[in-house]
Image (cartoon, rainbow, N blue to C red; front, side):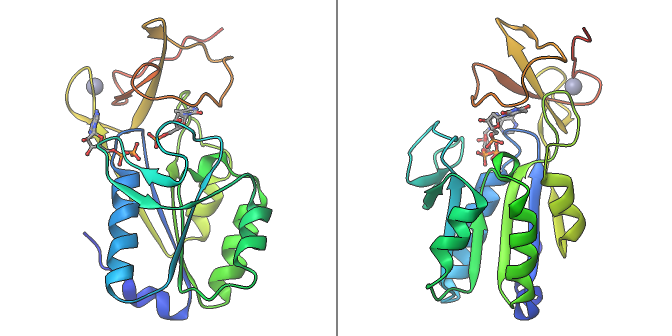
Length: 196
Ligand SMILES: Nc1ncnc2c1ncn2[C@@H]1O[C@H](COP(=O)(O)OP(=O)(O)O)[C@@H](O)[C@H]1O
Ligand SMILES: Cc1cn([C@H]2C[C@H](O)[C@@H](COP(=O)(O)O)O2)c(=O)[nH]c1=O
Ligand SMILES: [Zn+2]
């Protein structure tokens, strides 16, 4: 694992991406814990739309968790931190946030803070997921993680959406909160989208 602490002294953006089940939330929680051990003040956020596990924690698929503030928009994060002292901001599920998050992260890092974002780089169609490619381009450090492909067991870079056990259609809505019942990790070869 990379030790990124040095970047943070002048302000920095770290982005953790990959398909579902790749360990993005686990890695975010690991960095939050390490920063707290280093006596840095960390504030963590996630979008309210992610209501799968606990509403007040960032929770990984294998049950690791870290306390967080739940917000609707990037403006809510801006408002929340206005009168707070902090060193590090951690934001999970960044694919669900509005465009304002990109400018907010840039501004906050320019002001000497360390930002750690985690989210899906690609949607179920294997296309760039909303603001995530923009965050990746302005980041000092990007970690692209893989899961295990549930078909061939090789590394998975994509997320397969399943509707009644069958691949989802290209025209299906991009946002659908879910876990094992709707999604599995797949490699490039095993990932399928029905073009319609
Ligand atoms: N196909 C898979 N590949 C790898 N890990 C998986 C898979 N399915 C379930 N897991 C579990 O998911 C955990 C990662 O969860 P999490 O950090 O929430 O991932 P992400 O945030 O990337 O969706 C792994 O440590 C493992 O226990
Ligand atoms: C691929 C894809 C995923 N989602 C949703 C499904 C989950 O609620 C989250 C991702 O969670 P994880 O922490 O990475 O496991 O995103 C979606 O809405 N649309 C998609 O295309
Ligand atoms: Zn595969």
